[in-house]
Amino acid sequence: MRRLINAVSYVCFIEWAIIVGSLTVASRLFRAHRQYANPMIVEVPLRCVTDLEVTLFASSITITPGTLVAAIASGSSSQPPVLFVHALFEDSEESALEGLYDMESRLLAMTRGRGPSTAAHTVKEPDWEEGSS
Amino acid sequence: MNDAVAVTLVGVLGITGSLLVLVSAIAMFRVRDALSRINVFSPATGLGLPLIVVAAFVYDLHAEGFRLGSLLMAIVAVVCLITVSSVASNTLARASVLSGQPIHRKTSPNRLARPPEGVVDVDPDAVDDSEHRD
Amino acid sequence: MRVVVSICILILAAAIIVGLMRVLTAKDLGSRAIVSDLMYFAALGILTMFGMLASSSIVLDAIFLASMVGILATIALARILTRGQR
Image (cartoon, rainbow over all chains, first blue to last red; front, side, top):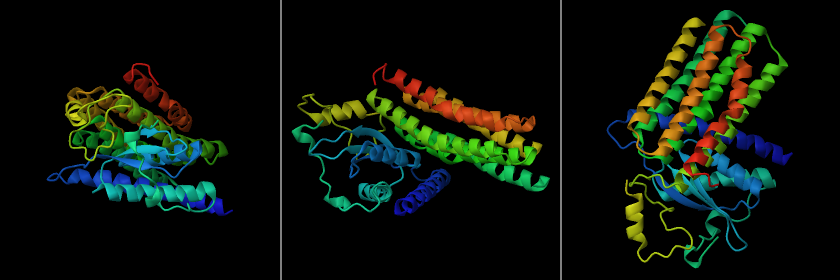
């Protein structure tokens, strides 16, 4: 029952994000004097574990206008899976990551029935220098 | 449902949806690389086409009366548009990164700009500059 | 009904023309792939509007089927871009 409420609120959240993002894409067209977009590719270590969660999260990111999943690195026993997200309209890397972690918390509350126990900033950045899969 | 209400609903929903498709097309002019173009395409499939589907459903409701099959088809069409186009955009973005389409040089920070796994590069910065400079 | 549907067709046709001009000016293949995807969906909208204009009863059936198989063209283009690798 709790999960059903969370699922309905998550779908409403995604719909609201789609509407707000579409309005952003449209309203930015009329600012001719400034640069249209501010593209960046950020790296998001995930708290999602199962395939279903990762797939749902990737689809949710892509359907929101302004963010797009460009690549997925699979996780191992010591590292979380990593998404590479292409964001267009964010000001800085921190604000982009903040919005994505908010969406992930809502998604995990839907699939697991409760919020994630670990905060977003405790997820370790994967160390690429030591060779990852 | 009388005539004026149906025409108004179809007009508002259809014109809004069509305008969103047009906005996506114009936004493709303003951005510079393939990834950004895939990115600004999602207003069309996430909101524009579902609005056109709802307009078609309102027309069907007006012309033929309520049928359960039509409602079911409209709901499935909206859900399919949202999920299927999302998966398609994922696949196309991944293919365009993998096949080395140029990425706009003002993309910063670019966390993908590193040599692939197992490639030994003495100077990664020089490689990044030559590969991703558009 | 005829007026609003005609306006919708005009807007969608303008979207297709803008996309075609983008194909002429864009250099890379990824942009062309995504513009072709945009044109597929705009043509789907035009088909729906023509169905309304002709008082057809299978408007919803057409858009239902087209929205389900719309992924195939994009997947094929993505596979072509990567030269057949997964």
